[in-house]
Length: 327
Image (cartoon, rainbow, N blue to C red; front, side, top):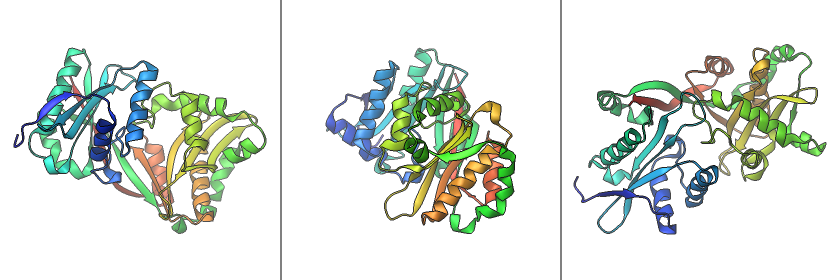
């Protein structure tokens, strides 16, 4: 290492969380890894969620002799899907301190922890701009488990009316919005939370890092954030029962951008065109409200959604690879 760097356990403090935020914000937003943040409050909330759930989260920081934090590495068990015993690891170093052995030192510390804890595998995300790291990771025993692509669509180029026959497969199923459900006084949260929980294990990289995400988290996503759009939260009903959902978040002010977040379909209702119908609803919403871009992500283990995106004209962009190293 060019600098005298120490790898030590993270000690929470206002200054330490600000340092994490600075490092998290040092990369363009589209290349941020899952479960890392650009705001100190988001880091605090992330750590608090583990404390409240009684789950272990281990973080180390790389510090200069004067105490300045220039990198971080942390891990927790990926509990949302089987098999158990896989450690989800995140490593980030400030750009001005790259290629000085800091990332390797953080990796070595995390790897030692995983082995000492008897974990079965190490999981590590690598965004596509860092594809030159793959040979080095392969030498360390990593292979690609799956790929996640970013997709974008200019909704002005896609007319949902061209695909109107897609709704015929729904039969008696109906599509409504969360705003409409709230207006009629429906008890919407228990059903939506049950639907999310039902499919959470199928999502290889979920938004929430815990298998048992609390209803309060989903409520915040739906109506409690500045970017929440209850009228852009679409629900498929079979009578009073919720069997599918997909929701949008607004992008930064002035960007005319939407982010498509969770799409969840009751497994017993799959194959009935619900995913396509929900996708069309989000595009129609974007067109009606003057948005110029929809962003989403789809993993390589979801061929049906990849096919829908292609059919509707979404363009694949750089994404990330989820790498796994058996221990």
